[in-house]
Image (tube, rainbow, N blue to C red; front, side, top):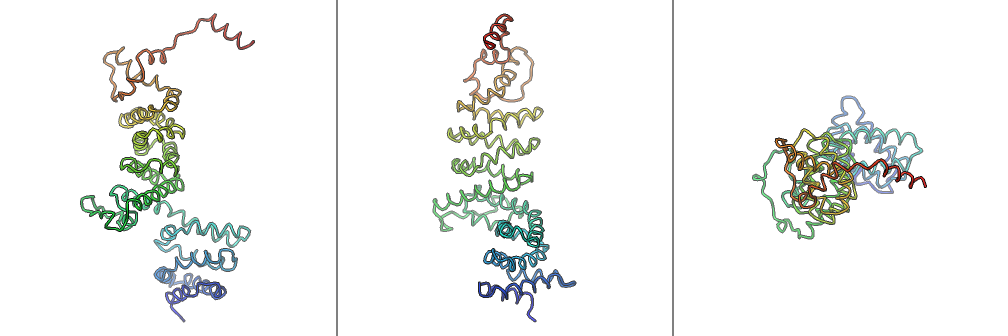
Length: 375
């Protein structure tokens, strides 16, 4: 009898349409070996060592419409995923999407649905770990200005500082500026995809917002971020974790940097950034760092008229009245944040005073207005 590793290697060679029934039997043989008491762990490791996970995905891809093969592949894969590191590797190879597609192709088959659901649960349990690792790679690629392929080889948990890491120039990697830009676009899409897929995981959202802040500060094309729905992902993270200092501070800082571009600033206003910034200011009333960063973000958004109108709808003038006029009217009032200069240029003291203390209407005027409305 062939060893588990030898059998897996042979299956790689016979992964073609003519060997369909042999492949189904071989998959069941592997399944039997990874469920045999006393040898389960060893056989799982042998399968993985012989690129068995890649084999399972290739089988599912090749025979995705064949019920018999999919059943056999799911049975075998279900008993291999408990091996440490297996789920992460499957996710990195796109296994989740492939398995989900196979399940949808056989939605009426209960056995495929049951086994596929168990595999998906196992993958989802480790998905956030893979997403965090991917976000760190993308951030390093942007931070060090290296191609994504180079960033993939950087160990994430090695604790190395930037000064210890020798950054290769793009030309040394055989990549042009155009290749670098394409790689950055891919990185942006990956960040947004991970943030959307793991919106329930706070650590993924923290790293996602941090990576976006790096993108903004390293001069990536903000239009690429807008087209990849990066603004929606950023605003969603700020709305989903309103009490997270890291997300709120970094989110406001990212909005401030993005608003340097008038076109992007306009998109920020249309996609909910105004509400996110105002909420951050209000919720962190006792934290001057977040409130200061929120004020800088408001100042950036004020460059576009419709953003300024949205801010005013959410009581921007009253907020500024408290920060600018109250200290003048009540000497000794302490204001622990700096009011950006742009607000002094846009609004006069009279504007702010009238917004905070609107003149009371005469009772007869109110009745006259009501009669006109009734008429």
